[in-house]
Length: 274
Image 1: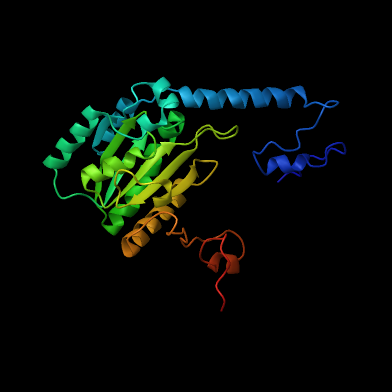
Image 2: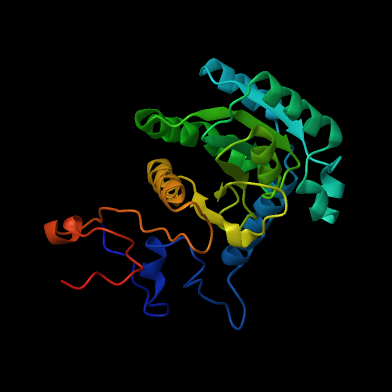
């Protein structure tokens, strides 16, 4: 690997090769250099575009069909993007027509499922368009291997996280996970979030959900996100809960020495005492 560039006027410049964070930008007098300012404006424009990019549920449904997966297209109570952004409460529930359609589907397919799978545009349809299919492919490999039953992929336009609770309840699902576009950052306009709930029902707060964030190529890999989700599913069924009382302690192999690779557990937690 080439050595990081060294600038005696900006000795931190080499750190920029290790992170997308805006560090060591330099300065011109008391201001940022023109290049750094233009990069910031470009990133800000990308974030705004991600929020307003129209969701394409029909296109996503067609791609799922090509892969042999059934899907169901629904809509939240927010009729358009403007009402979605101005009225968060409308994005947290289905429209009357969509709720009725889901009830009819549940009546035609009684018995419930282990996991209801929901996909919503959230605040970044870009994230959903880019990452839904590859993540679902990795997730379904693991759920199939462990024998979990899944619902059709429920696509919700103008949806927020809590809409998944209503969907899970109407489907009679034991658990629900929603894949949703997260609020864009200035270096991550396409970050996908996963929110998982055990025993979903209308009225639950965020305290009853587990979040797996920053699923994208530059962040948490699809395989690792699926691994963490399967861990939460197993533990939720064993302990019959989710949310703040269910910690992510999935066993993860770390990169480094053999001793490091043998360490198990969440790297944020203290290692067990021998």
